[in-house]
Every structure is written in structure tokens, then in C-alpha cells.
Image (cartoon, rainbow, N blue to C red; front, side, top):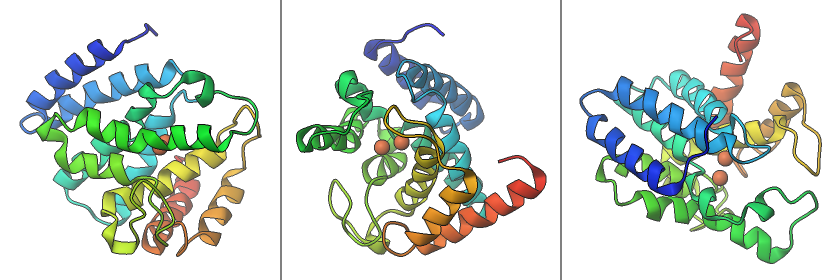
Length: 215
Ligand SMILES: [Fe+2]
Ligand SMILES: [Fe+2]
């Protein structure tokens, strides 16, 4: 896949925002493509945005979100880690554990992604998910330390989908958990890190997926 720079990404996003309301399916098709290209440039991230988007939509389906909400959710999931393009790649792929300073720098990606994309009014609702996908239900997350329903529902959905993908993916410093182990971990953290409603919805989706063999 060809490399893509920030200017090219921004001009693609500009095109996408112009058709987002009238032709959401076309807009999402292009956004999936851009997001895949961005992902493929960072080792150990290939396919992350796509998978988080797929898992988020499974949760959205369980929650019976309407079509418009599903478009906003998919947009947010595809863009959730956008701010990582501003983070030093050496830190993102560091094979050993991170220093406190490096952790703080990585944590900046949520707010950086939000500010870069805030220029696009059409992404406004989706940006709730970009900004809040690392908030925790118990208020111990970042960047704002929001808790429970103060976290926009889209951020609470992506938090579960993102954590599941992180746990089931291999990292330079650890192996991947099995699907079953990751699902157990979500249940353990339900009510502390994650909104129990979103965890239950995802576990239901996983059970249905296992039955249909499509997750
Ligand atoms: Fe993130
Ligand atoms: Fe992520």
C-alpha cells in the first residue's frame, strides 16, 4: 500500500466531509480506505481501525442504533486513533515498556486527534468518540477524567471495541490473548473501566458471532 502524508490525508478528509451527509455510504467507503492506509504505515497497527470499527458496529447493532447513529459511530471508530500520526513512531513501536513521559506522550493522541479534526464541522459528533475513547467508566481515564454517562456513548462503545482489539493483537512486548481470555477481561473490567451496558452488548455480539463464525 502506498504511503500517505498528512496533507494528502487532510485533503481526502475534506472531500469525504463534503459527501458525508448526502452520500454516507460513499463517504464511509473512502474513509475506510484512508484509515487502512494510515494504519498500514505503522507496524503492529495494521487493520486496527477496521477491526475497532467492526466491533463498534456490532455493539451499535446490539444497542439498536439508527442508521444515522451507525454512520457517526463508524466514522468515529475509523478516526479514533487519528492523533497517533502526531506521536513519535519510535514510541509507538517501542519493544520495551514505556517511561511515564512516553506514556503521557502517547495519551496525547486522543486530544490531538480531536483538535486536528475539529476543523471539520461535519465530523462534530464523531469527534466525541475520538476525544473520549480512553475515558474510563470510573473516571480514571484520560484526557478529561469523565465518568459514567458523562462520557459520550460513542466513546464508551469504542473503549470496549478498542480494548478487545488491543488484547487480541500481538504487541512487540507481549503476545495476544485468545478471544475467550479477552472477553473474560472485559467482563472483569465491566463497571470499572467499561460501561457494563457496552460490555454486555459486545459479549452478546461475540456469542452471536461465534455461532455464525463471523467475529
Ligand atoms: Fe486510542
Ligand atoms: Fe485504538
